[in-house]
Image 1 (spheres, rainbow, N blue to C red):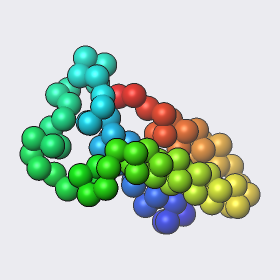
Image 2: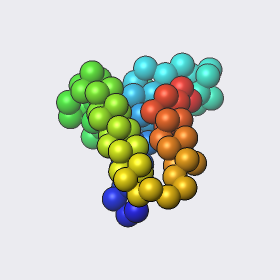
Image 3: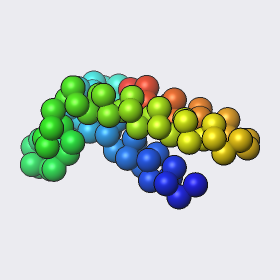
Image 4: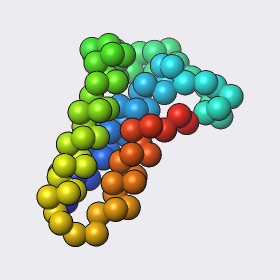
Length: 89
């Protein structure tokens, strides 16, 4: 479960980087493009936005695959993963 937790954290951060770059300030309720202004080392700065979007799919799929292998009640974590993959704010 520890590795799944790390992957969920990574998924959140990658999607957060994407939203900071492409998000709607009004919808998000906060200033966007702060990471670029602050010169933060994001996945987008290190690679590019398309790479980041592919990583969301890759990491999200990896999480769900690992959860299915656990063969226990993982529905809530799968829902959380889907939410993180598709969140807009």
